[in-house]
Each structure stands twice: as structure tokens, then as C-alpha cells.
Image 1 (cartoon, rainbow, N blue to C red):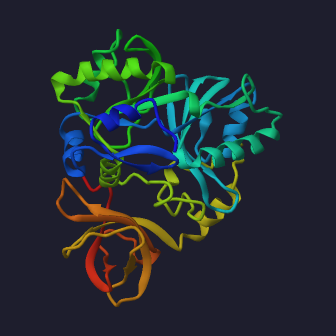
Image 2 (cartoon, rainbow, N blue to C red):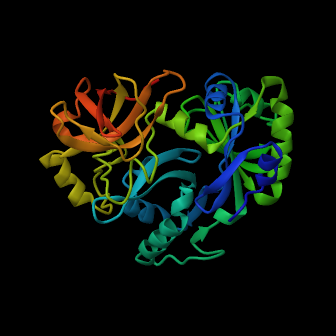
Length: 366
């Protein structure tokens, strides 16, 4: 099992550790609900060093990215981040990723931990058509094992991070980034977030990780900074309706079905993978949709549970579900037949053989 620069600190803090995407990762420290509310109300730090970073460089960098991603990368400017997905050629999704534009010929992709090898192979294969080579010093480079990343999230997060920066960062715009010194080391500071509570991500070289960690806890002491595990990361993102690859989207789900039409741009001249198929799907109408739902009767929806119509007909399945720490009610997402996808539709979650009432609602939940 792989470790991150910060693993020893998690173990010392008494984290419950488990394998995730090949890494020994902290699942929880003081409890999921406690950690969840700490991020909603204060500030928490997540070790997300297991995420992957892939560099795409050179005169054909934009051409390749326009081919392999669904969003319009030509709209980016230096210092701007874009959320997008990579269609797989069969109507599904290779991965959902963040694209960082450093300059016109330099981009960094942040990819999901479990998909690093799959994404890298896909990017290299597509890059060959543009004459792009892979490896150190080449146009395509997988830097995932050289970079660590901390996500500092919550309404007080940027007050903490500001103490480690010489230039103002508290008013940085959503989905922008800067290459700058943080805690005295070279870093990429980005404002994206997977919790919906504000904050940032800090990327540094592995060798600078300890310096960043120590400076962060020193800066965060007066604001009550807390360690947060992957368990609360999941409940936080679900309350905001953010998709999780492997649950809500995967190689079998279309970005349009997943409600990701807003990152699927049929721009003139952008001949991305699966464009004709997705255009046809859009024109003909979707047979199923990813929806959010809230339990009406008491029950906690879980991944894989069946979703049913009021008459008992199975209409889909739960992709993500939990007891919402903020709402104190069961919430979830799942794919249902298009006829039952409208907000206000009554559905049921089949829990241990019993149909438990729920209602389709607009997301985010909070």
C-alpha cells in the first residue's frame, strides 16, 4: 500500500486508516458527523495527495485537450481552472478532471486517484495522434508520485491560508489558481473545492510537504483547524450534489445523463471524443437521468439499493446515499427512468426488501 507525505501525521493523530485507491488513507479522526460540521462551520484539512497530476505541454497541448475533454478548453486563460470530463468513445466517462491552464502551452490535469493509470494510458494514446511523447521532459508527463496536495476547506479556511502567504489570497475567484509561495515553498494554490464550503487546495512537491503541514497547523491553531477524513469528504460532497467517480459516474454513464451537460460543449470546431453520439443523445432525449432524492420516511439510502416507482416497478438504483449531517435526514443520488426524474416525483428506496418513501428534489441538498 502506498503512503503520502502526511500518513505518519494521520496515524499519530489516531485516524482510522484504510486502503483507498492503493493508498493508506485516513477515513475518520473524531467521527464523520463531527468532522463534517467542522468543515461546514469552521475549517478542516484533507490529505488529498492520492489524487493524480498530469502535465500536458507543447504546441499541441490545447489540440489534445479539446479532443479528449468535453468542456471548451479554449475558454481558459492563464490562472483559470475548468471542471470537465473525458468521454471514453462508448458514451461513458473515462474520468472527471480539473484542467489548470498555466500558459498557452502548459496545462496540468488533476485526476482521480483510482483512475491515474487508466487516464494516463488514455491521454498518451490520444496524444500520439498529435505527435506528443510521454516521459520526463516530454510533452506528456505523469507527476502524480512527485506531488502532494492538501485541501483546506470551510468558511475559515482562507483566513488560515492567508497567514502562510505574502500576497492577498482571501478574495481569489472561484475556479482560479496562482503559482506562488505558500509557507515559504513553491506551490499551486487553487480555489475549487469538493465540499461547497469554500477554501482551497495547495499543491507542493513531496519534499516540501512537511514544511507546509507544520506551517498550516501553526496558522490554523487559533481558528480550530481540524483533521478531516475521507468519510466526511464523501458526506460533504453529497450534500452539495457533486458526483463521485465510480459511484455516480463511470465508464457506463453519459455526461448528459449525469447532469453534466454544462461541461459538455458542442462548440464550433471542437471535435471531441463521443461528440456525435452525445449530440444524438441530446436530440433524441435521455432515457434515464441522475437525480437527487430526499427520504420522506425514515431510512438511509446506500449505494446499490434499488429505486422504485410508487407502484413498485424498479426504475433505477442508488449511486450515493447517506444520512445528511446538516439536514438529519436520508439523502441520495441515483439514476432513474426519465419519466420519474422531475423534482417533486414520488419514488421509493428499497431497503431490506421494503419500499421506503422518498421524493426527487433539486440539488444541492444544502
